[in-house]
Image (cartoon, rainbow, N blue to C red; front, side, top):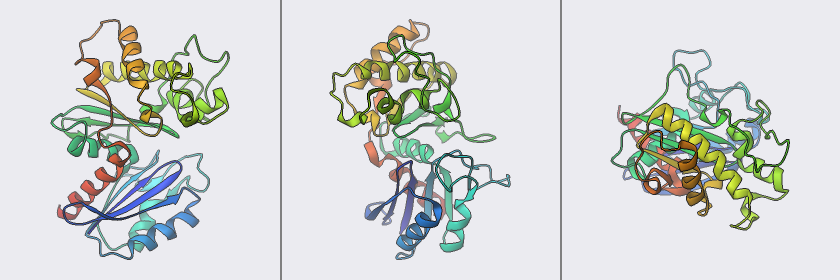
Length: 288
């Protein structure tokens, strides 16, 4: 059996799958402090004999195996999680090899092998939900260097149509992509959750402007074959024509891309991208 953990801003999704990676059991655990979460996670997996476990954790995390903070969740606004040795806690409790990376990296890996990036080699995956983060596939592999990229915190230019004086909701940066375009930013503007809004609400044009601006930056920086959007906010189908139109205006013909309806797309695996990628990485770590 293979195990998977997708640790997100509001919930942990834990799953086990058979040798064909067909999910046999799955549980959702609210994202609380680690003293409450971790025992529930461990209890779930201890029911099974795991050959490998893939973990995609919210960041920033220590991802360099040579670093003293490898396996740790680093500075985060989530109560109790800053500087917590999550990987160490899992290794102490579970007797199996563990693949450790970010939540967006596992989702990007899932899309590469089973979703909207199949057959491609250079892709950006962006999750837009409680927060915003990105996984980069370069030459068919998940890209990491000194640390993992934090493409959700790039600076963005405010939209002329945005709420006057709105600087975003990020506790670290004014006018960063996450602070201006994640779910909590939408709610901060309009006073209700994004999921309850009409599909024709003007806020979606503002949202599309910021996501398109980010896509322009990623296109110029990484020259990907495709940019894939996942996460709860990205499930709003009306966003895609708006993003594509805004991208065309902001790029202004400077570089050539594939047709925009093929270039800026929704995740093929939807909300299962993370768990799928984590299971694939669990299988990989078990056999290498």
